Length: 341
Length: 244
Picture 1 (cartoon, rainbow over the protein chains, first blue to last red):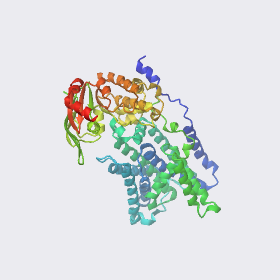
Picture 2: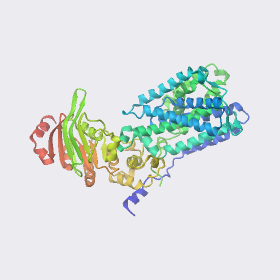
Picture 3: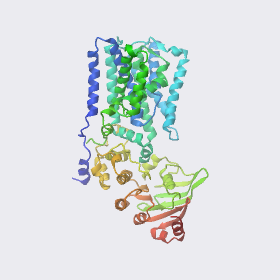
């Protein structure tokens, strides 16, 4: 046995007692799978849960950027919104809404748009600052919102309404359990793919990049290229989210690609716990759930947004690691990358 | 032929001429010390070699290639490695993952995505940690290490990819005398496969490990030679007796 081999056997093993995060992930999955059976008789709750699933995708796309890679994107809604318009227009002008065609098209749209923005914001000669990227993405979202607000072909300020129902063959997905199932499958697939990405050796590069970009460059990494790749992947996820949202609502409008929704995605992520993937899902569920309950409660119906705002402020200011930080140790959140043998 | 050749390096920050006409040759397998008073341009020169900033004048050739305008990642891939003056380990990663991150740069993006080199590099990671007495801390977070251990970890990270030239900016800063002695012992064996440029204020430390010294003063080379030659250099003595 060589010295290197014996040392390798002393390397950290995967059997560390990291159990909270997988337990939270499994509990969340179990809850989402059980939801249609629990809420079967209440259509408005299925609609709420479907919205949560779809918006969780948008929140995950922001988490990939900020929580794992240190890219402050205030423009995730741009990819969400443009993709929502694309599926709406394809349905209106081409009379086509087969999910096997339109969902990949929406992902491609989000990815290409994000890649173009990354080329502009991240791949220039000078290393961009976080502020530059934050303002760049924010400006992109704002400009897109203003553009579609005045563009008659896409419905201007009224947006696109009566979007053709998403279909698979002859089956059309209206609101309800079938649509919920499609959204859940999309979320699980995106979640597992993202989890694989962020826990891979490439994920280790992202984790290092988030902490010290300059150090990574001196190791030989092309930091901006890695950022551009993650930003593009996040654009793909946001695009998928936007398409599902448009089909589910039957409508899309300028506010779906502006700073308002982009910031909401940031809040979903921070509220649940950034850099965890499951945190954004829980954050989305908590905020949308709370909004639903408060807006439906007689005693607070007049001022529920104020209550929600105060709750958000308290969590973001006093619990920076989000709700998940209450049960998850820093060591477990960081995890390990070089353990598999 | 020297491994690193600097010719006429100048660096200007607005009205301040931080470096002017600096020539420097570093031969493979030698340890080269950069000394001088505070503000003499030592760290600026090291950063220009590493690519942290581009020189305003002059050329830098490394291993036969002109790298004057090359970005840091290209220099690193050619075999140039840097340890920062301020410790730059990644505190929210384990000690093990810090070194793995330094070692896995040889893989393609697809290999990284598929985690294909993770298993194969385990031995090399632990060997690098063991060399700097950190094997027992592999699973701790880098931010939990003492200052001296963080300095060692960063040197281990810088050495892990097997560079041809290692740039060390004040590697013993903030260390106890015992930690400095050990650091010297840990560095000496690398001479077999790696050249070194070291910026250090501890003259005894630098004299013990370096083959040659270059003395900078106000951005210019004041003297260059073996340790004995520098110790006998009248102008260097004046600088050190009058200012240091």
